[in-house]
Length: 439
Ligand code: ASP
Ligand code: MG
Image 1 (cartoon, helix red, strand yellow):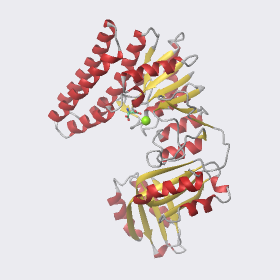
Image 2 (image 1 turned 180 degrees about the vertical axis):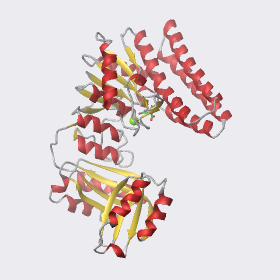
Image 3 (image 1 turned 90 degrees about the horizontal axis):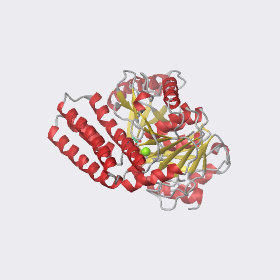
């Protein structure tokens, strides 16, 4: 069994959706197709949700009608036959009636989740109608019947496995399954989701649950690139990556893949291939358990980083200082990314500063606190990079003109990271592209 996931842009236009059917058709054997919502839909639904939460009903309903009109246009070009048109029309009307009804209720966070789920529900149903029209037998698997998270918002693998396998058993003679990415049930059996961009995660969880031979993530770029193509001119796709390399890159900013999605794939050893819907022939990137070459494969950058320095004279020869510091971050559920220590101070970075005020207040008890915001982590990834002689020299030679605030080396064998002010990010990425890849 293969799992093929198509992102919002891959299904965002009727002709793209037709193209998706062609791509899926080229596969042999049984396959599960995971779809995102049509591009832009989740953003609009999120905005409607925010407006409703803040009591702005009129503005919300205006947005709803704009979205409705968009789906009307979409359906006209998606299907041709009378019967398909009325099926598609029925689906859209049903979901929009529901969306409008949400606007009339006492709107809360739970309603937002229900609202956000409408995008994936519509895209998969519409795709199924199109497949019916072209005579392609298919079965829609409702994600809300098998995709589940527990109290900690972690996937409930046992539930997913047993329920998904149960559903597949009911359709033994089917080769084409379709399901929604992103949406799931939570521990209270309510509609929830796997966070923005979570359809990739759905695909890899499904792959892990059914022990798929391959998970393909289809987007609009030909794989993971060696550097950020939105910022640097000359980049190239990377053909092979190990799970560890890919998860560092995904976490540190390679937008192509949801960072959590590598974990289940790695755990169950399911290869994940990144493919381009606009250029299906291109190989893309294969992510697997193989760790081949040792050079730096890619650079990724993460913005919105805040560096926090705590300087304590008492740290000299003291123990327990770091634990005290870390406990504060734990208390406010704020993950730490990079750390650098000296005998009298520790610097660390966070990317979520929602609780910064409280954190700083408590840190003050342990020393003088300095905050630097608008920082970027630039992360260089490759198997065993830290064991390769000369790599550090190349990195520092390339970054000669860039002020570096922190360095992380040796924390994992896959990654060397530096922290710099975000205003230097572009120059740093360009310089490293030249110095490390000659591009
Ligand atoms: N539609 C959701 C989003 O836009 C999930 C996804 O596309 O992966 O975040
Ligand atoms: Mg995505």
